[in-house]
Each structure stands twice: as structure tokens, then as C-alpha cells.
Image (tube, rainbow, N blue to C red; front, top):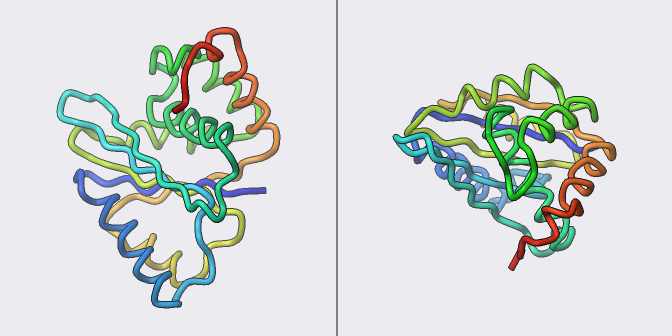
Length: 172
């Protein structure tokens, strides 16, 4: 079972800075884990979200799961009132993710923590977060949220991606 960790910041550069700190710590050998996936979500002053994901090519799970990762991040960031996400109805997807086991408190707190002008770092990890990293996450200026994911969450995302509306989207 993977864990999804989100650290939300009131400043646009907060998520980028934390990711850089985590990467420096890992490069220095202080970390024994690395995320499967990372994404930085920023929200401009008008409320528009931008998602930039990074993939460690040595651990990437393939194009389809990368699309699923992007869809998961977008669904959580936008919340149930997000309209449509790449052709998928956001409220329906959001409710299916709750049914699949994502924590309801997590799903409601993360979108409300993404303030205009702010940012969030999304991390998907497949092993427990090491104590130094957990301390770095907890002492950052951001708010930390986490939830467990499951195979059922992956199935919900795959179903959304393979729906008739989703097959018209190019992922290149």
C-alpha cells in the first residue's frame, strides 16, 4: 500500500523549495527512500491550478500510471467542485476515490489548503517515510496531510482514464 503525502504552502515557492531540500538530503545520502512520484501544484491569484510532475525514470511505472498520477493530483487539488478533469466529471471521480478508500478528511482539507498564490508538494511513497524526512516535512512552513492509497484507487483512476471521454485525450 502506497502513501500519499501533501505539504501545502501559502507561498508559490514553498513546494519547490521543500522538494529541492528533500532532493539535496537524498543526494547527500541522508535519505533511504525516494518517492515513486512527485508533483508540484501551484494556484495563481485568480485560482487557476498548474500541475508540474516529476518522474524518476528509474522508478516510473509507465505512461498510463503517469496519467493516473496526474489525474489523482488534479482531482484532489480541485476538490469535488473542480468541474471536469480531462473529460472526467470531477465530483463523480472525487466520490469514487472516497469510496475506494482515500481518507475523507484528507480529501477535504487538501483543496482548502491550496490558497491563491500558494503551492503544494504531492509525494507518492511506497515505504515508510524515514525519520529525518518526516521531521523535515513536519518542520517545514507548510501543512502536512497524508493518506494511504490502495489498488482500488488505481482501479478507479484506470476506469476514469479508459472511459470514452478519456480515450480522446493525448498524453504526449
